[in-house]
Length: 240
Image (cartoon, rainbow, N blue to C red):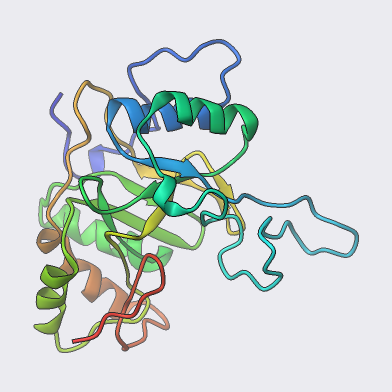
């Protein structure tokens, strides 16, 4: 099915498989990613219950100072990501509320993420330019545009040509990861700002070259954009 470009493509997460009665939302979404779209996934660490005196729910990992609470792999690690339906079903049957973590790169989508305010500006600019977009993941603090797989070498070439690259931009490529809807993490609910359309094929993805200029410009014009080498999805700094 052909995807509809631009601002008209604001749909809720839907897919063609009819979920079984009582199937948790995370399991159903994880199975869609793994079996219909062939995206390797694994469960994220999730959040621990709030205790007395806590301001909110913290990360379930052992690090009390975790900067991405709930929004990262822990056990199993990122290398365990799979498209095997049996493994996915086992994971989310045992941990039905676990976040869905996409292992980016390889044959799976990559992503570029930026602060939510800059993300909204970037999508509006891309719509005005009639640039066809793929799925966009949103949390209360950051938006992530899914793009076709790219190499760090190619990304480095693109960014090297820029006068400035905001440090608020993050690049999720091979070895990185991204949390997908309908997960809940420390910053809040993960949702689709631009949802994949239902169909038999994997969601269409733009090349990173098509969107990176608008993302850099939107990040520079947003408050506290910053101008230093950007980070990848796993926190690795890009160097040139």
